[in-house]
Amino acid sequence: MNIFQTIILAITQGVTEFLPVSSSGHLAVLQILWDLPKSSITFDALLHFGTLGAILTVFWQEIKKMFLNKNWRLIKLIAIATIPATILGFLFQAKVEQSFISLKFIGFSFLITALFLFLTKFSKTQKDTISWLDALIIGIAQALALFPGISRSGLTISTGLLRKLKPEIAYKFSFLLAIPVTLGAVIIQLPNLIQQGGNNYLLNGIGMLVSFFIGIISLKILERILKKGKLFWFSLYLITIGMVILMQLC
Image (tube, rainbow, N blue to C red; front, top):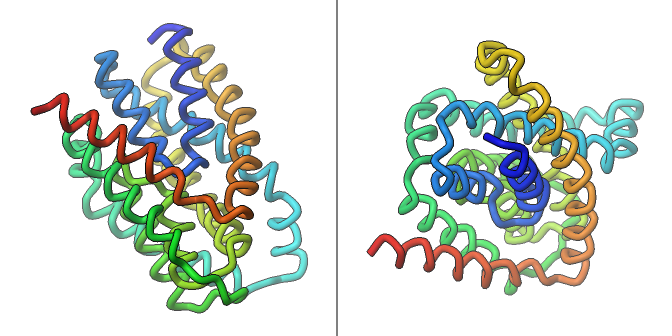
């Protein structure tokens, strides 16, 4: 992988990790087109580390408040919502990794994400409190996003809105929930990163920095779009890209 590919992948990660269009799907498509080796999955994890830094930066006050005020209820809700992804990732790790090399699977997954986003057009926001059931259902949505083409932010926020949560509540919970899952994904890939040796450290560092700064910008853009109630706009893009991929395979 060269510097050009590194920067393009990092920008793609920074934009699509937070905008509800699936970073894993876009990265997988680019890696398939460029015929990058499987070891690039580790690079994906490092890009996620960069966007994790963006989440921690943007939501630092919320995180600090949660622990300083000992908001155990919110911490427990995040823990509950993390369980489905942990179980799915453990039981189906091989199948998840296989799906990253299937353009057909990714194309259909883009369409599934588009459906969830489109349904938010009809959601009615009422609640500003997350129930235990809300957390579990949002957690199941997050678990599905282990597969490429299924947007984590898209499904978790959409599910929150469909559960009648206010946009700002669904937005905040979605990204607080991303912290343990993203951190876990990075930790799992650490042995592979060490095995790669030092030749890729410069590219990895560039990738993380680019995804970090682009991620902060994307988070701010998504927040504005949510406030305007226009999340469903992204469904048009995903329908287009999903259909283009599937038609290319026919």
